[in-house]
Length: 338
Ligand code: KG4
Ligand code: ZN
Image (cartoon, rainbow, N blue to C red; front, side, top):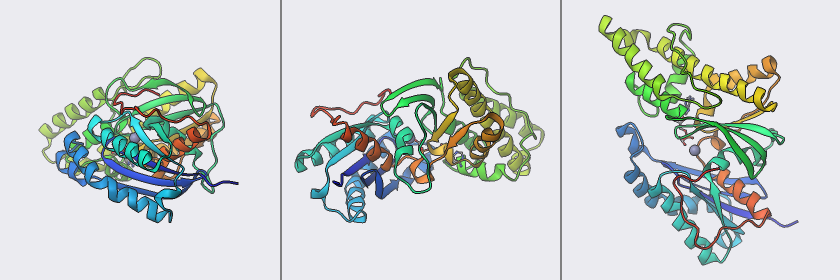
């Protein structure tokens, strides 16, 4: 049997990533995260684009050398076409195009959101793949979606955020509390030490399977302002309880919508992806859902849930098997849909 080597390249937001996979198995998975955005409390698009330009050559070199292969061993190159920041996407797109052209091998364009979902099909010992059809919930700093996945490339978004992503709800709440960026991991850590019912935050009322998180962030802001007026040390004294209450509310929102999605579709296999799937609370709530609601849940390794290029390479591999190659004139697309 033949070995198919795919190089994946991801540059949609603030991580420059490259990965080599062979027949769906990961040989290398390199990510250069950009620290520059921390001091601004969010991703600055122009700075992200410049950092990608600096990182892309060394990151790709490292991915090839860690995989212990030469450029000439590659069968095809997969890259993130969108969605994402245009200036960031352009770096990966033009790099992948020139490299594939130079090596005279096929180019594979990949939708980043399909990457988060199809990361579950990376060959990995000890991880089971979800059977079709399944529901995928992608939760990160840039996206919040529930997708009905009927086959690899037959997907339908059945719910999504109408404003902020769930990761933004974490990060913006963290900013109000004076925590560093991104605040999700620290809120998660502190939430385990606090009382989830200490303060009641109301869940936004959004019809159907859609989400809204911008009101939640405002609710946190007003609550904190009101309490700090009464007690200037409120945040420091109650930080763990505040974090626990924020986490409890956010997870409640996600689980409520998943429950609705499973009743509406009759599908009980649930796979998650995106940076927020690292959250200990959501992982526990999904596990409990197996007992409580008869769900079967799929949680990938953390390095395949945050932005990475192995997930881009696996989508590329699946497309390669179907000979679904990119056109020579393929362009980055900031608002690419599933
Ligand atoms: O997928 P990702 O690395 O990048 C994109 O946004 O595409 O996700 C980053 C997001 C940030 O908002 C970060 O705060 C959040 O994931 N995050 C978490 C946790 N770890 C990362 N949120 C809650 N709990 C965590 N443990
Ligand atoms: Zn992402």
